[in-house]
Length: 211
Image: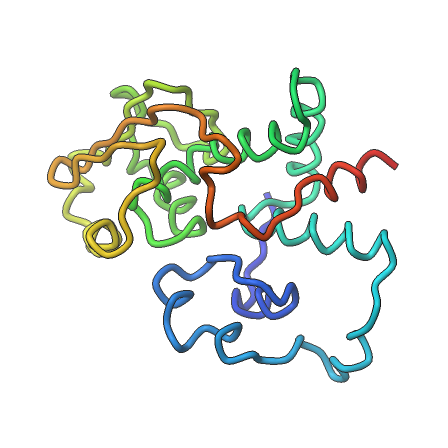
């Protein structure tokens, strides 16, 4: 599957919002959003102005899609699945995105960011309930146990990522044994629990796809 291979900070600048694509760097002074860097392009001022409703909805969709590192076709499939589920479509979409295996690996601090988590999963370093799963979009269920494969526990990227637990803590819907490099996906998070998506307005994504 095709994936974006360009500079990640450019995506944050394009959305003028932190997408948390580079781990600890996003919280440091090196983050372009903290530095208030301009929108990328030859004439960024020409694009700063009042957006149409469609433009606002599109930017919100791009922000969410890029945050989870997905391509348009796959993201649209997730939306259609959320649409068929009972409840609020926008909240269903966020819940499905949070259940992706690469996202859960990131939430458990086995990787510094979602892009790195995707690589860790693809390279067969992750077990789900004792079995290797190398599909980043695998849907994790409450109660599933996620762990780093025994031979992979010496990897520096995993050890370095786990240090973030002591700095930033863990999401409330996962538990992690840092020494054993094992964790449990306790429950599907409520929308209000996902604080790093506080400025995401998923209802605008629903409105965009509903046209």
